[in-house]
Amino acid sequence: MMRSALTCALAATIGIASCSSVDTEKPRTEKPRQIRVGAITYLLDPAYTRLGLPQSKALVPEASAVYTIDGFSLDLLTIHASIREGRALGTRPFSAAMSPNEIADAYGALLTKEGFIGSYRIGKIEKATFAGAPGFRYEFSLVRRGLAMTGLGYGAVIDKKLYHVAYLAPMKYSFEKNLPLAEATAKSFQVRRSAKESARAAPEEELE
Amino acid sequence: MKRSTLQAASLVVATLVSTTGHGQSNIASGFDRLADGTKIVLMRPSVAILQIDASGKITPQPDWSRDAAGHVRQSMLARNGRSRVQIVELAGDDEAAFSDLRRIQGAVSAAIAYHHFGDSKERLKSKRGQLDWSVGPASAESLQKTGATYAVFIDVGDLRPTEGREAIAAAASAAAGLQMILAIVSLNPGLAPRGPVPSSGSQQYARAMLVELKSGRVLWASLPLPPSSYGGTYDFRQRNDVDDAMKVLFDGFPAP
Image 1 (tube, rainbow over the protein chains, first blue to last red):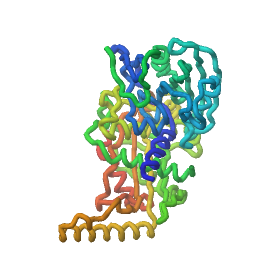
Image 2 (image 1 turned 180 degrees about the horizontal axis):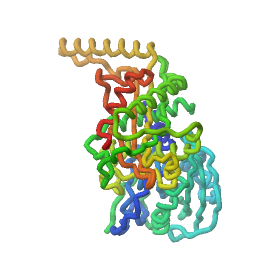
Image 3 (image 1 turned 45 degrees about the horizontal axis):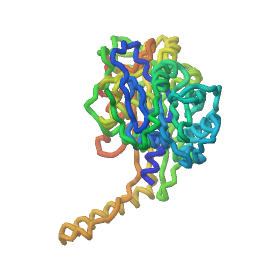
């Protein structure tokens, strides 16, 4: 009961609103780190902090990793990797035959699972290369406790497994502010196809 | 999930993060203190009081919340005669125009409580240990029409047990205490109480922040509110308790 309350609470607190910290044009001198989580690698700006497992699971169920720059109640960069067929994804099990629209819908169902977020709407969906494979890019919006949020997702099904990255932040100014960093991560995403291991709950490892 | 349950749940986390992690600076880097005669706009305090009964049912208490918000407001305005800053309010319904700012500020406040004052494992790399948040210049700038250069935001959340729930918790606590004494005296750990002792469910947090309107920067944030002088929570329905809580909350406020 308490555990569930805390889980709800985190998501609720997240839903309190959103926005972020405008750190005023600090020069970024550090290079992005290369991160490996199981079978995937990606570049991550040093400004990002990975949220711990209890928090990230509460905020975005099934996520392999959840990052933030300004705080869990503000911006989120979520990564779902190596989602196998049959694994729960939102309100339904994942199937490699799902369309980009259905996957975007499933992501919305994940976010709104705890009931703190509403009005999830998918915007433009288009074909895009993701993780070196044919995939899709989509825009979405939602409302968290009355505050308009906007998001951008990239996804691809590779070897019948889903790989998905999404960025979510308040629509006003903070979305634009952190967008280049989120897109850089999405565009750097790579999957080692021969890797046997799953990225699920894998420890993050920083590569040289 | 019911709204009241969500509110209560968020209160639990807000309280948890508000009672840990001291030692962090609560003033933004490069800022010292306000100048003499600085005009500060006091945003309408955001107060949510809920009540939890013996069965665990949670009910929002809008009347208590409204009264408490009034007490907080009056307590802050009463400082006008005693401090070297001038506290002003928005006129009439102007506050409604800033609902987005309020939501943004609420999220920033939650992030500061969790990542800056909370568990040290949750610190953000981007902040480098500094109080380095903003509600955004575009959000706060429009408040400058009040003639103020800064704004103060106050958020309070309070989950209060009913008398029935308190009585059950007190009885359970007393029984557990007796069991423990018995276990110690008899050197028989098997007699010690098993499982958690039901608590009254009381949870509370209060947070304040000072924002520079021109930049939107958070210049100061209150430290987590410690227990009241008598060891319990503050009763925000009572003006005296509110005065005490505000005094503690604004201890260290960068006044001239």
